[in-house]
Image (tube, rainbow, N blue to C red; front, side, top):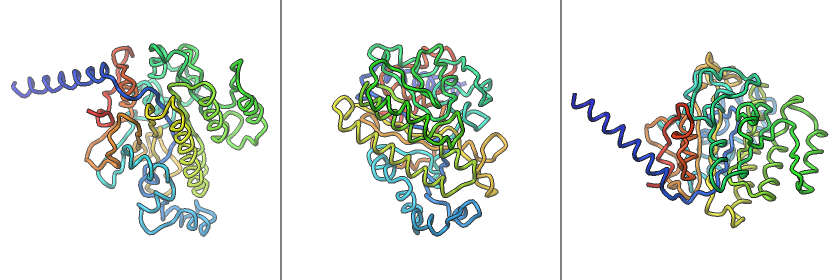
Length: 368
């Protein structure tokens, strides 16, 4: 009986602690979320995979070795993702290195994109969200919630290469501007650069098909939108890491990782040079699902039937996050915790307003 009371006491204490943070003043006033679709934790923490480099999935083996190979995992990961391992890991936190016993996972049972993004933004691994089809998401998402808060109305925006986010974020209900696929930015006062991107995206080769645009275009839109409109919450969803993996092109997969790490660095450097963002902005970087590892062919795939594709990672950098670096504790975090974490960083409590299950925040990313 005593143990039951103790468990209730601990639960009540944790809830009270979470609510106290929601009411506390945080330094974070702006939030940038970036996802790299299907990027494995193995490359994030180990760099280029020697088995895959030597396999038939890598064409120009000598070229890949020249660009990405080094003797140790620490060296290789710094070559592949220099911003993550030179800035974020020193000034923020990086989670999910299973070689050190730290685990990050999706809680949904499906391990593919729509369920993964639903989990990130609603805090709820809803089993109904079990398709990549254009099904409108009935769940409230944290971006929608933040957009209703004082000082944030009209200051939340999403850009994605994959076309599915208007449904994932329920743009028709939420009213969020969600520029996905080949959608133009049609704001009346758009600057000339944004107008040029509206034209350019339709004229560049559609390497990813006629629905999913190049990540470079999504990045350029995001950069120009931040410059002109100064949004307070920005979501940027890259897609090409997943596309190259599904194609089985390990060389291009590594190239996209390196390139997108550079895009994130450029965005961070830009906002840190702007008084509206400097010292007031938190950056969250993650993915929507993992991929297989064994047998070797499974690196191309993910899903409920692909072993270990629930294994993921994330990183946080900002004024409220202690600079503890690579997390080495034997703990497990879940993507259903991100939504409440985002809200608490801005001083809000999403759990009280969502109307559905929401995972507890990851309190280790917020200073105590």
